[in-house]
Length: 350
Image (cartoon, rainbow, N blue to C red; front, top):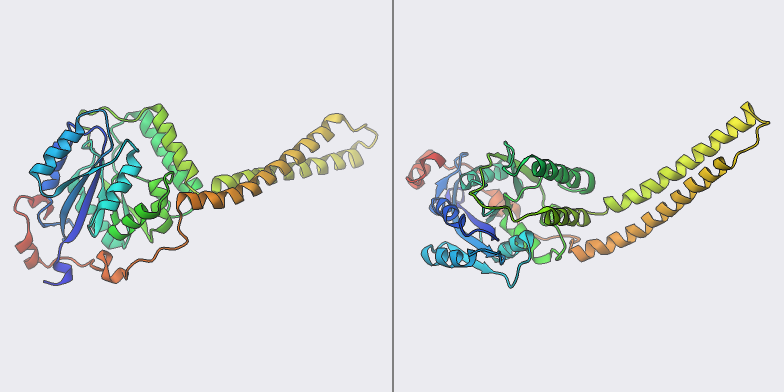
């Protein structure tokens, strides 16, 4: 059997906070993918492990994880010492994985495991080391949360982040080598998707249909959502800091424009009029604000260097030859081989 006929080995990472009622059905769906199956693009793949990362939620998830690990050889529990949050839990799962590919997904059933094959096809077709699921329908969270989530992700991806700007999603596929490297160097305050963008060669999206959550209350409230957004802002780079310098230049230019305007008016159009105090006050304020903001921007740039270091942004990352890794095996499985390896219990994935 050639390399293209060997299945792509996938590790699935599920951060668990309130998964008592949803982990069982999700694991049952993933079990059908633990035998070699064909993606829609006729690539052979297999889920070789499912890592359930216990993040100390308020329900009985721990007992469910133990039970699933006892009943399924492909399930492994990862135990954190306390609650750290979704992204640190995901990083812990990445660090513990061993697959050629890493798929991260939520515990609530919103993400359909059957879409994993489509993510893999997109990664191989576009030679992307990171693929985010792009929902073709609105997420089942309510209009307000969907709007604010979409807006915040756009702001981070387009306005603040400078590298690999796409719409982030917790349902993502990452080359295993890249995911484990991010888990090794990312600082405690780094936002996972921003950290992935630092080193990912190519980032893209793949369309999926989001499902309804399986009767589970969201673990997010207004405070945690705002904290989540602020963490995105702080770890997204130095563009936010540079805005301070830009504002300083804008105020200074406005001051110069006002000076030029006053000189023209009082010199050529109304030379006998006494210069009023508001004019000089406005000029001083504009120049003063401009100089202050520009100085703060310069200081912020120096702070930004330390921020990048604290976040763990590496100056480089050495990886293996891409042609020798999973991205180098982009070929389709011939029909004969596909028939031999088709999972009879998954005809819809063949």
